[in-house]
Length: 300
Image (cartoon, rainbow, N blue to C red):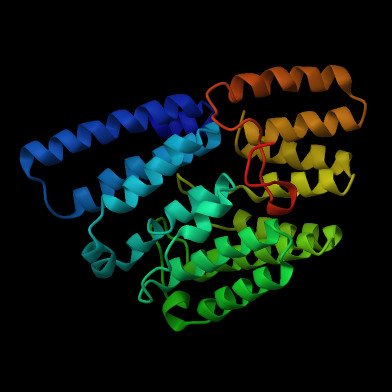
């Protein structure tokens, strides 16, 4: 599947095209041959899941969010009940909305069925991001408490999701990320950065799979927080680290450009700006905004 190669070398648009073509081929095959069983429940959804991930890296929010919703719709609810590892796909629309700071839309999302505890925990996580973005630290902390309570459930501790990640490990990342956002909402930027680095270390320890098991490269958020803390040299290092893992992604290229300009590295910043323009040429948001404490409901 060429999308995997394209994703690793930072050619996200080509990855999206490959996944769109693969999904169409699968749809034709499934319809013409009346395919049943595992193929339409996992292999076909994988293409849609991958499209969500690659479009997210491009900054194409409409494509990414549509793919996330199509992904969940493509799997019958009974399949999620029969194969617990498929719950990895279920919170994807929540991740897609959070990725693009669609705070109002997140609050309109209904609470998942209680049987899907991992997805319910993610629902609390993204709601916490919303409240943190609004400066409502106490409300965000309350959502974090709900997340933590669910993370202690034995079902979560024993749930291995598609790709091999433990659900509890992913919720640990969510917890530290949200703790950081709560700190940011309280103006405690240094504490925010410490919590986000804890999340990044946990993310680094996850099993390798494409798309990655966690929806957001945490270093992108750390870099934005470092810029807010007026620590541009550290932000530069952090964005460069993310670009090693996710080459030519506009989210980190824009942050890198900003960090270079703040250090007076004008010529280098101009070069990165050109890379950003190319990377973001198909985006439907106007800036690589990320962290709830550093963004609003509309692109800046």
